[in-house]
Length: 170
Image (tube, rainbow, N blue to C red; front, side, top):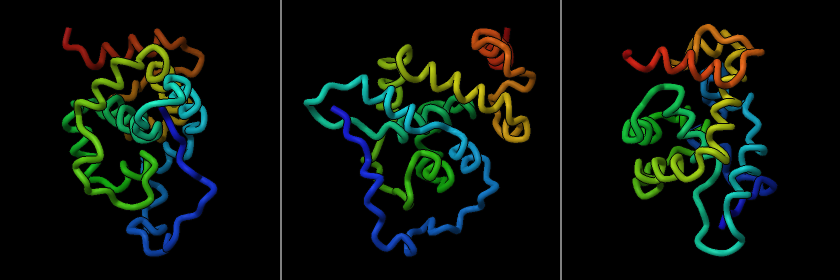
């Protein structure tokens, strides 16, 4: 089961939030977050779940963390560690206040979600990220794993081959 966040209800005391508008708007994660079509990501994510059962983790949280892993080349453990240490990554993942609860997520959760929904959700999301970065070279250059020589008209497979050549040692 998946329930969307209630975006219509404003935060109470949002001016007291640790983020409270004090984040640097030029940060790469904030700039990328503004370019991602999060409602499309959530629609694809929601379609994977039935109407009954235990509620799933938020689509933006899971997708955002997998994007961090993908773009920075982190392990699942390192991705979770970065999430708990970096307010910009938390904002990218849809949080408006700093989260510290270790019960919120685990590296195993990310691994399972990536494996279970690779074909339906996350491969498309990674392709979308590559396309966003392809047309924004000033932003692309700030991410470790983003292909440096990508043309927007290249196919997803061409982009993936470029990425793998940079990652794999052979």
